Image (cartoon, rainbow, N blue to C red; front, side):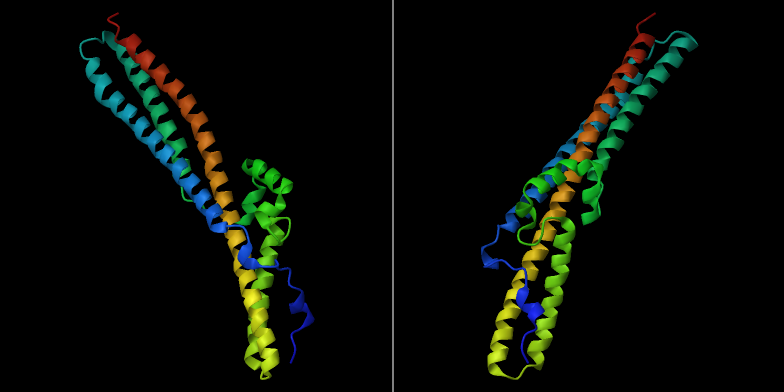
Length: 229
């Protein structure tokens, strides 16, 4: 029983062991996510500290400085506006820390246009010998997995020593390339995840800037109410 022709034409690299160092790629993406989330946690902590200062300090500073219902309403309104800005910044930054379920279809998202452009420029860097796009990479993963299982079944049923040696060789090649393809896909998913977190962090910075303006507006209103007028 010989090896089917379909199994002899695997789209495999000449030596799967000499492929790009994928663990480094994955590690870099994971490190980037860790760093960006650390930045987000620092932002949340700093914003929460501002909120604590507003709640703990400003009301006491207003004692004896409010004259009439108008000043009281202005002070309460200013404090509410400032706290709304604090909560807004925390909510927006919290999106960066939210766990994400990532699939290859996420590549079609609007926030990943830059990554898609990079893949189109240098597909071999991202997909290696397994195609020129995410869909082709995914098909290659399934193909090599199915081929590995098919060769393994043939090997179990084969009794001829020469053919068993040939099947054993091709089983090793198929397993190597299945592992290589899965590593490429895993690295791509890690990279997509990193870009999603990066986009969320950029949005959070914009929201935090706007929220800071809201906090300053509220603080000004509060100070106007307690200026002794």
